[in-house]
Image (tube, rainbow, N blue to C red; front, side, top):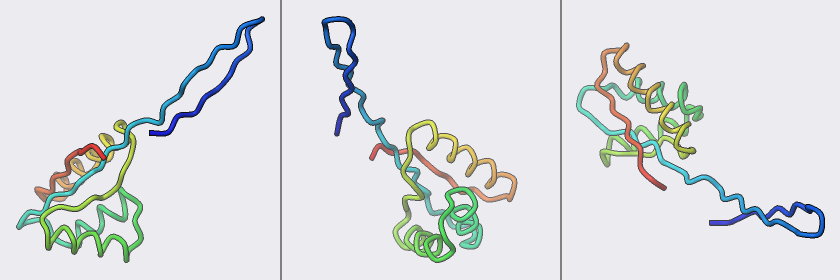
Length: 103
């Protein structure tokens, strides 16, 4: 993990402050036998901002292997995206599930 060091001068003494990059988390979509491929592509383009081609590739990977990474974010952003997936899936009548995994 890389660190950025910032120096602040306070009188005669120097204070070092280390700022670490936040830990990243993957949002992983899980395959199920009921959610349509079109809906998964819609989720990947609408919520995760993938292009149509990228969303189709990810959807096919999820379909073939059972899981696929929709994106990598800070924990708060990842949790928000998961909530959006679950809300959208519920409204559309799909059981699509998304989980959070450390990178």
